[in-house]
Image 1 (tube, one colour):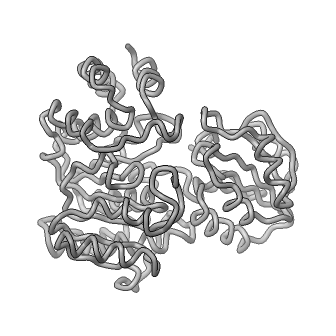
Image 2 (cartoon, one colour):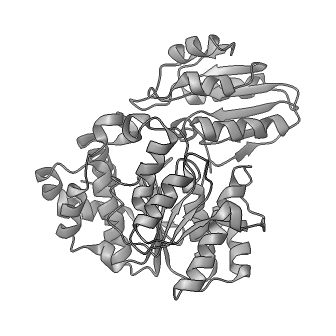
Length: 408
C-alpha cells in the first residue's frame, strides 16, 4: 500500500473516535500493552511529559515542545486529532513523520493489528512511541487523546504529568460531572511523579489532591504559583492559563531532572510556537478587512472564552460559520452564541458531522438565524462574499470544521 492507501486503511478498517464516536472507546489498556510488548516496549526508552485536560492540552503540548526545541533538545511531539494530514500527529522538532515510516510500520505490523483488533488510536500511539525511540529523541511530549485513565497513551512513566483543566465534554465516556471527568483525567497521575494542574475548581481540586496523595505525587497548581505572564504567538485569551502551566512544568523539570531550560528559552519558545511546531487553528487569523478568525474550540468552556474574545473585537457586523459533530450537547453550547450575528450553518465532512439543517433548526430555537450550506467551504465563501471590510468572520464549532479551511 502507498501512503494514501495506508492511512485510508487505518481510518476505515478500525474504530476511530473522531469518525465513529463511542464504539472506538476501549474499556482497558490491555490492547495497547499487548502492542507495546509486540514492539519491544519503545515507551520505556523515552523521557516524556504527559499532557491531559478538557481544553488547552494541544496548545500546552505545542508550547512545551517549542520551549524545549529552543533549549536545543530533540523533541518528539504526539498530539491529536490532525487537521489536514495524519502525519501532523507525530513530529520531531516540528517536522512531521515521513510517509515512508508510516507505510513501513503499518506493513510490518498489519497482521498483528488485524489479529488483535487494535483500534486506530492504539496503532497510532504504537507508531509514535516506536518512531520516537528509533529516532532517539531527548524528550517526548505526549498528549492524551481522550480522558486519561484508559487512554492508550497511559502506559508511559513521565517525568511530569500535566492536567490543563476540566470541563464538560465527551460525557458518554467520562461521565457528566466535573468530578467524574476529573477522576478520569487524574488517571494519568503516577506514583511519585510530580503533577501540574493548570486550572481547578471547587469540584475538581479535591479529586486531584486525593489522587496525588494516593500516589505520593507532588502536586502544583500553576494558576496559584505563577504570576509572570509572557508573550506568545498563540494569542487567544485562553492561552494565559496554558502559559502558566508551561512555566510551572519547566520549574519542575529544571529542579528535578537533568533537563535545563532557561528563562530566555521559555520566552522565545512561547513566542515561536507556530514556527517551531506548526500548530494550526488556535485563534488563527486567515484574513484582514474583514478580520477572519478560526478556532478549534468545540465545547462549552472553550467556546465561552472564544466568544467573549470576539466581543472584545471592534466590527460592524458579525458573521459566524458554524458546524458541529452529532454528539455535542447543543443546549449547552448554542446559548453562548450571540443573537446579533448572521449564521452560516454547515456540516463537517466526517460521519459524526451533524446535518446543517438539524443545526439550523436547533439554533433557531435559541434565536440564532442563518442559512444552511452544503459544505464548510461553501459557507465560508458566502460569509466572505457578504462581509464588508469592517465586519468580522468567525469559523468554528468543531475541530473538523477548521480542518476543512485553507489554513497555511
